Image 1 (spheres, rainbow, N blue to C red):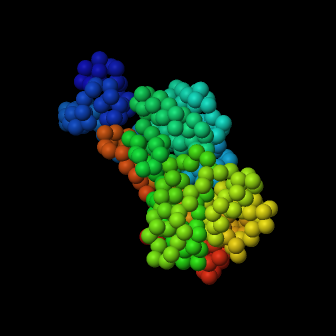
Image 2 (tube, rainbow, N blue to C red):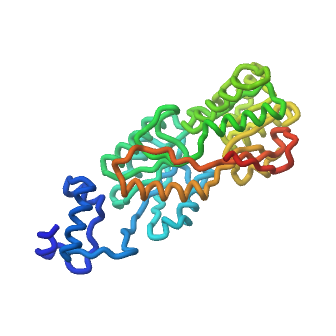
Image 3 (cartoon, rainbow, N blue to C red):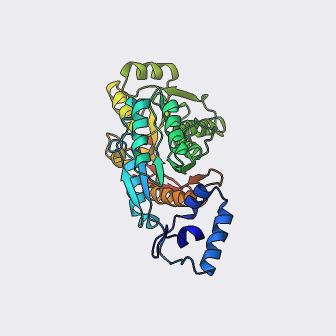
Length: 350
């Protein structure tokens, strides 16, 4: 660094690379780089100024952005976060979710890498037969390019396996337990869990919490029953109802619940009189569907702010172990669960 400054590679007023970039360039440890910069500062070679932190550009890699309900408010939470005020969010081409191919995913990654982003916020694909291979390919490309990744809502590996990346979300297993326990307290005794095919790891964790609540209930319950089907498929839904005869259903998310609600109406099944229904996310339409939906609320603004903070910490300390950064959720009780609680009642899960 002395030689580069003396020879004019770095001229007066020039902003030096970050410590993280120097670690990569020189193959030195963070401690060594920090000590070298302190020595250069003492010798008068460099000056450290308050508020001169590097501005980062972060990529957003979110399937079906604009069509999925929770990720837009999470991104808005990122943009509004105080930690993000000096940084730029790059909204790249959105993947097509269930129709995404490996080549399309690689193309999007290549664009982000070419844009020299400092990090990528990635919501792994779900409801895609090739989701595991595609998610892994994306993570591998970004890792090989030395671009930090923060995962939103879910891991790239099926629960309870764990990847090497930070994940920002809620405690989905506990949320599944809390939601199922609410249906039990409301009087349901034959509770099923329904999700669409190729469940995301977050939804698998929710189903695990559902199983915990059913098997650990203090009242006699029918055995747990987890079904993966398209909730708008009237034949499959009818067959499921005939086989299990549920009086309560936990849906993997609000979208699944809304589609199932319509199918149940077509089959002549009334909610909550015959089947109590509950789900996760508390999206905008959860209160305006035909029967207002009991659901777990995800605080998307807080999730966005936590994601930005997690990314900045990851850039500052790239070698620390992967973390699950959990933001608290709460239960919003509405008519679909048939509870005696008032319309729109909220219960914090702290």
